[in-house]
Length: 312
Image (cartoon, rainbow, N blue to C red; front, side, top):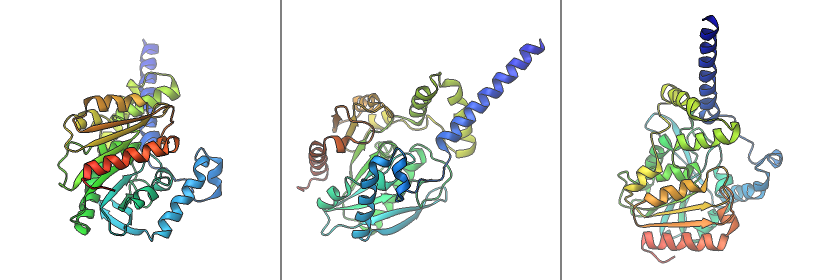
């Protein structure tokens, strides 16, 4: 009898620890890497070292301006604003999970700039210069993006807006597809996004531990509700895209082992028209542009032209 009781308590404590560790590892902010330091070469971001410095150079050369807003839950959020000469529109860029605008957009800044697009690139909450202690996998981040759209329209009321994101940034933007957005928001470009916080954490958990994710995720979800004010099934791109109000271009590499390409396929299958899908054969996570730059640029350019009704 005592043994069964002790075993039950031990299993309960183990599940509580596993769930809390899953929440802490996935959601709690950590000290960021020194992106511009040479020590980055010794990390898995080392292969992007030249892109990181190209990003920094672009921001400095084009006199990127600091912009600030306050989130609905009181966080001070930062972005860089890079105006174009005689702009035809603005692209709002959302970077990925535990990443930075220096890594995720270094290869595409000049493309958008050459298309005469203003660039608004926020630091997602709990990243960069933005405040926050918890990453919510696009749930609260999508509300932050609505704040940035409002900031943009206060300063540039007549310009069309494209929303674009990579990885978690893609999901952040896709969660907005069925929301009430200003009429000048013309489309979403989503590169290698996941369907929901629950699904991506579950996928990574299984890949790392080779164990069922369910018990730990239920408890992690409890901690997310208690300490972060969101839950892991709160948003799902498959729900938001069913009633999408704007055109969507979805991009994914078929060789992605971090965010499975099937997540984009599933979301695209239920997405309302107009929609477009670009799959890049063999491309790993977040590098579809680097794998097929000409095809990527042509697809994005044509999508923007059609969505905004302009010739670039």
